[in-house]
Image (cartoon, rainbow, N blue to C red; front, side):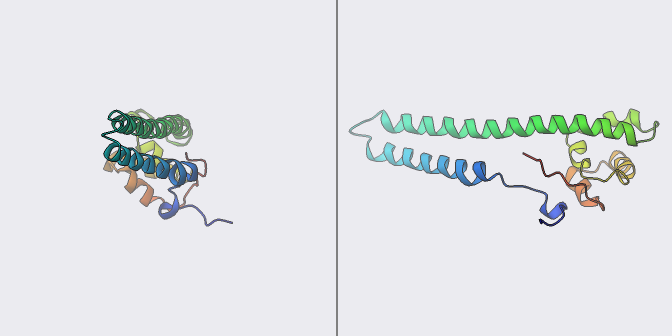
Length: 146
């Protein structure tokens, strides 16, 4: 069984993306640069076109990954908004609008018991997401992160 999740081990590598797609795209860019240099006299358009296609594929991979993360963060913010509405005192609820977009994403790791006090600290001290995660004593794992 894996160790319990905490601040030091909560980040995740997506093997297909990080260990296959990224290295292949980097190798493809290297091949495109090689083609551009070595075939520039025989096929003057092949090298530059290969570079353009390589860069387009890299941008596509980056955009796909960033769009996945944005969508996931939006879903997490909705989930945390519901959770905060259920767990926070009524006088704190109007102040939830003061949270940044990333603060509820970081607060999701806090247990139900410490969420109200950590939210109050976040609102009053303007804690950054990293500081929020480091302040969590009873970590609530999220093993479904993209």
